[in-house]
Image (tube, rainbow, N blue to C red; front, side, top):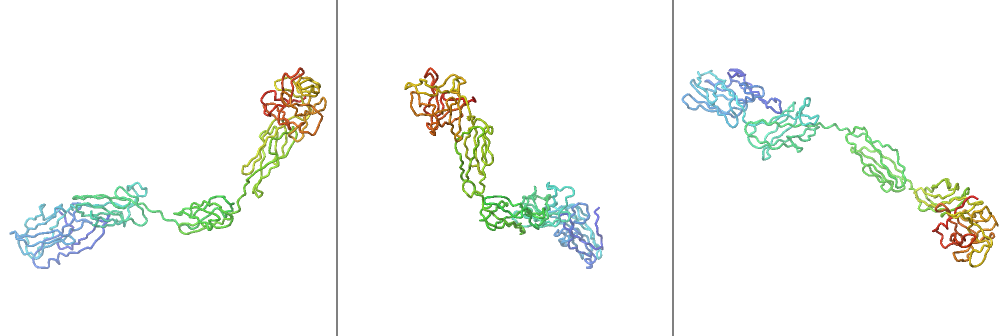
Length: 573
C-alpha cells in the first residue's frame, strides 16, 4: 500500500526543492490546513500530485509537487461535479460535498508524465466509487505520484587539478557556476547554478535541440572538454522523451598573480666604446612574479640603442640612460657612457721590404710604420717561419743563426701584414766552390787561352780540384745583401767586365775597386746557390769544353737558373 507522509487533520507542508546542481534549495513552503479548507459544510476529497522520482510512493525531500494537473470529480450518476488544477505545490481539493457516491479522474499529459504510485486512483486514472457521508467526511488521501517523461541535462562542474579531463578522487566540485540552457532559436530556456558539490540539473526539457552555455567563475580558466568547446558552448543536444544527459566540465584554477616589486640590473653602468655591443642582465623581484616581461628604452638612441630583449649597441661618443620597465610600471635605470671608438690601422710599411741576405752571426733591424698616426693600437708582431735560420724579437731585431731562408712577417693588431725573406749563408771567410754534379772547381787560370779573342790573364775557369789557393775564395759582405768575392791566391776580386765573348759576358779577376762590377748576390736555390752580378743582373754560368785547362765561367743572359751548370755549391775550404 502507498504510504503518505501526512494524514487527515494534519498540517500539510508542501516543501518544494529544486534539484539544482545536486543541492536541495528550499523554495516557498505553502502550508495547507485541511481543517481550514473544510470549514464549509459537507465533505471533501483531495490531496497531492507530486513527482515521485524514485518511484517509492513517498514524497521524499526534493520531490516537488506538480502544478497544473487536472482532477475531475463525478457523481455516481456520471454527472460532473467539477474539476480542479493542482496548485503550485501540487495540491488540489474538492470541498462542500453533499452525502453521496462519487468517483474521480486524473488527466495525465501522457507526453509529460506517467503514473508510478497511487492510492485511490487506478492505473487508468480513475478511482472506484467512494462514499461521502456528509459534513466532516474528508477523504484527503487521493494522492498520485507521477514520473516526468521530459528530459534532464546536468551533472558536475569540478576543479580538474591534474587536467586529465575527468573528475578523480579528491577533485572538488565548484559551487556557484551558472549554466544556461538555450533552444535552437537561441532563446534562453533555463538557468541554473551549481550547488556546493558542483552539481547542476536542467529538468522538464521538452523535445527538441538545445545547447548549454557555461559562465566561467572568477579565478578559473577553462581549457575546453569533450562536452564544451573553448567558446564555453556545448554541442547541440537532441532531447527525445525522457532522457538524462550528463554534461560535465572541469575548470583549472588560475595561479594567484604575484606582482613585480622591483627590477634588479646586474651592471651598475656600461662604459663601451663606439661599435661595441652587449646585453643588459635584468630580472624582476621577487623571482616568482607572475609576469616577468620587461621593456628597454634608451633616452638617447643616437648614443646607444637597445632592443626589446635588452641587447644594446654603442653608436657614438656620449652619455645616456637606459630605462628598464616591468608590466606593472616598476622601473630601474642604468647609465651608459660611450667612449670614442678605436682607430684601426689602415696601412703598414716596413724597412727592409725585400729579400735580405746576411751571413751567419749578422743581425739587422726591421722598422715598421703603422698609419694613420692616431691609430689606437699601433702594436705590431714579428714572426720568423724558420727560427733555425733567423730569429726576430718583439722589437724587430733579426739575428741570423744558420744557413737557409726564412720568411719574416710583420702584422698589425687588425691583421695587416708585410713579409720578406731573409737568407742566411756562411760566406764570410775562405770557401771552396764546386760546380753542382761535377768535381771541378772555380779557379783562376793565368795565361789560359780560353776564348778565341786572345789570351787574357786571370780568366775564371773550372779546373779539377787541388789545394791551390787559386781555388779558394773569400766572401766579404758589403751591406748584408751583396758580397765581394776575393781570390786567396792573388788577392784579386771577381769582376764582371762587360766584354762580350762567344758564350756570354766575360768575367775576370781584378784588383779591388768601388765598381758594382765586383758586387755579387748569393741566392740560395734548389739546394745550392746562384751567383748573380749586381751590375749586370745576370748569373754565372759554366761553358764546358771551351779549353784544355778547364771550362770557362762567364755571365749568361738571364738570372733564373735553367741548367745545373748555373748552380754552385759553396763549401768551407
